[in-house]
Image (cartoon, rainbow, N blue to C red; front, side, top):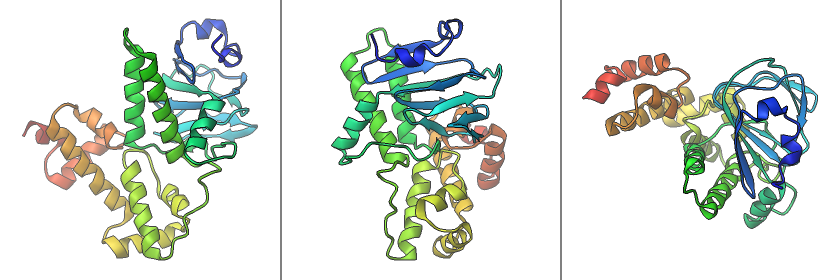
Length: 281
């Protein structure tokens, strides 16, 4: 018995038999190739999805939800999920995280109440994706070590609690000045620059209206938030291309661009050369 049977048994055998799956004490990793439409699902555990492309529209607890690009999707225990994407074939990573494991780590971090994630969609940091990549690589090893995987699972759960909005970290820091609030927005942009963040995401984080935020940010830094984000992404891209290990398309993804063409045109406009020319030089 793995403890994940109640979720697995909801999925037709013909589909589950084709899903790569790795079941551990506190976390389970699945790699489905398609979304199942027209069937209601629920989980007793936390359910986290890392999609390669936006998932199809989905009813979550009876409310229809559409998804943006480059977000991590989180469902709480007991949430009902009904996908409308009949026949949509998109590979993605699915995690089940035991409720008691999430709660135990939250308590170690100083939280005492039952954990609830407040947002279905969440921007993610480079640190979180590096942790996920390392976990997936270790899972694939023939000589994988259970204790190491347990430690990696703890890291992933900790990053989820640190980065994503929950009922325990939703109280906004009381900013004593506008400068402090804008400084917090800068930290947010630097953390999530490689995710598909929007002005509204930042404003939700610092509790400020978009109009007020954009005006205050430009007064303090001389750039709009979008201009600052582009500068940050291009500078990071320069570092990655100079290092030489990643292709232009990989660099675009690592730096948060939604397409290679947008990355290439922005890079050339900012530097005067194409990403490939910069990489060769």
